Length: 484
Ligand code: BES
Ligand code: MN
Ligand code: ZN
Image (cartoon, rainbow, N blue to C red; front, side, top):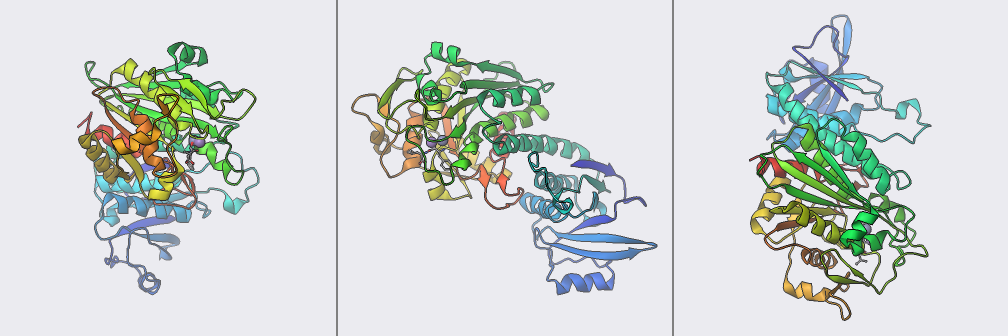
């Protein structure tokens, strides 16, 4: 979406003009027919409501959209307003849309929130849809922001950097697994990060073998695609400041391995790299807005396939930490990947704070559905900060418990641990596994985003499909902590 700024609604402004309306405050300068039309349609200005009308203006007809922004005009409501507006007109045939900010009474901050909703909701991935009918194609390409107060453009530049990150995550997540696999994930990032000032490092299988990452490599050994560890470094903070480290699960496809998944719905497992996707998108957001913080993103990239070389249930693997794992179920692969990636990241960067993101367990969706990601942490302060960043950004998290009684469930008779607990508390036993890879003094949080990376129906600022969950959360967390 091209977003342009104009001092006022000029004579050559687009035909389609939007005005934002506070709940219960229908503008009094509307023509009678429009006012009665809005009332008759039960348009009250609730957040996200859109009412469309046509108004004669001299020798022209204006297509006027009234968009509700609710009573409180909070960020979420303003984003919803921008998002609903876009959803309504994205394929309407209109190429351009003007937002009459002056008539909507928005300040710079509020305008930027509306624009963020507009931009996020306009994202689609039509790369492989060669036979779309005209009326299915996106028409809306330009938004003219008219009469926005001073300072809006700077606010928007900042928000647009975050939008860019969210979009990149969505792209990585939406791409099928024959397109995005470990090597191509790396290449897509190398290309996207050109000129952003980040430093990229890639570890290949030989290097990981030398480092002793037997668990991560075990997951990838049944695949023709080589596993990779991708490291994205952004140094925008003081040279002396320890980096915050994000680690993402990047299983580019999860068949389950020899413990193979049922066929129905297996295609969803192309988005089992949603954690790594969120980490890459967050790094892009931070670099694009030149965040004053040192942050490292580590993506553990593997494909979990069942072939003649695949690991078997019962295999014992040795992790980089030195601990051994009995692989009871090859479908509990995410934790095997993350454990080694976390060990490497902690030894390499000595972070105070380590946050991992993963589409780790189906049990997480059973527990929290698609409203909150599960948060597990060994530190109350970190947990509170993430919860707060979740509320501010809209990427919500809900804290779940950890404890020794759960930890016992993953003890193994033959190795230091097994990679699954029993039937119950599956998300917690997965988190307990990860906690065994947290080194002394490190504040750690694990976000199980299995219910959040993908949506089967449109939501607040996304269409169905890849949501980009996690980017805004991590960006907000860095704003509140390292930059706070
Ligand atoms: N990637 C899956 C978890 C998942 C399931 C994410 C559905 C998104 C939607 C993970 O690797 C997995 O297979 N987990 C197993 C763990 C079990 C074998 C202990 C699961 O959740 O069933
Ligand atoms: Mn699995
Ligand atoms: Zn998985």
